[in-house]
Image 1 (tube, protein in one colour):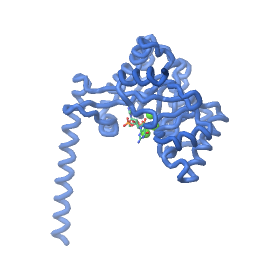
Image 2 (cartoon, rainbow, N blue to C red):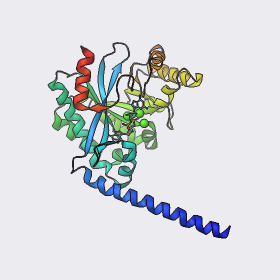
Image 3 (tube, rainbow, N blue to C red):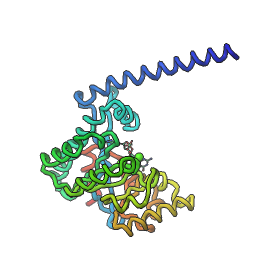
Image 4 (cartoon, protein in one colour):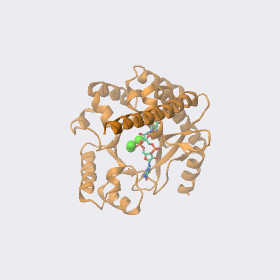
Amino acid sequence: SKEQGRFQVQFFSAEARERQTVRYSMEKRLFKALERNEFRLYYQPMIDMVTGRTTGAEALIRWIGEDGTPIHPDQFIPLAEENGMIVPIGQWVVKTALNELSVWRGYGLDHLRISINLSARQLQEPDFLLNFLQMLSHSGENPEQVMIEMTETVVMRKAQESIDLLGALKAHRIKIAIDDFGTGYSSLSYLRRFPVDVLKIDRSFVRQIGEMGEDSEIVRLITLLARALSLEVCAEGVESELELSYLREFGVGSYQGYLSSPAIPSGSFVDWVLKSRA
Ligand code: C2E
Ligand code: CA
Ligand code: CA
Ligand code: CA
């Protein structure tokens, strides 16, 4: 058993070393990815539940690596947060997303809203607000067509700073959404103090709607809460007509999900919107 123990130690350290190597080589490629122009934004339509019309899109980042297949953010955003790369990547995201508004306008789509994800590390940057507002004013875009998404955990961790930050964004007429609503560490009272516009109901609740009574009740309660506070509600990850009909019955205002479309490249998104309007 002593032998076995020693063997295990060696086994795990070899495995750990292997993990380090993989991480290191990914990190090296990640540092070069921006200058190599390897990131893309994909766009997932956000759809009005009542009219069925597209109200905008959420920008979701992809990393197109050597073999051409898009790598999803869960594979590299955590690493980028750890080593700080998320800051320049995030700036690229904001610039690209703002530019997308002018691309859409070129196709006569001048009413759509772009929604941008921000992670904790980005919001902690002392220059975040200044940078963001500068990029916005350089773009010349209408701030009311710009929404930012952050999770409630991020907001709650530094409550007073968040109130100030969100207040400043709000003063510039930028829309604010709480992402993955219902999954984090949240206190309902914060919703009154934070200048929030939209609650995005997490996919984990949507997925089990109708199957498990409790999740349906949570969705229903979030909708009631939102109505009481005059907030919009957007459901994430809608995959079936059944889910959609429940959400509509509960009074959820808009949705995203594979039922209508996954996140797709800019050109495909424009085609999709133009076709779905016809
Ligand atoms: P999120 O903001 O909660 O985004 C929703 C995720 O659900 C996206 O995954 C989207 O592609 C996926 N999704 C949408 N509809 C459906 C559906 O019907 N079924 C299922 N199964 N999934 C659906 P994605 O694109 O892989 O992004 C993962 C996470 O990475 C995002 O979660 C967000 O937190 C983060 N992220 C994405 N883009 C950015 C970015 O530009 N900056 C930062 N900081 N984070 C980002
Ligand atoms: Ca999001
Ligand atoms: Ca989400
Ligand atoms: Ca999420």
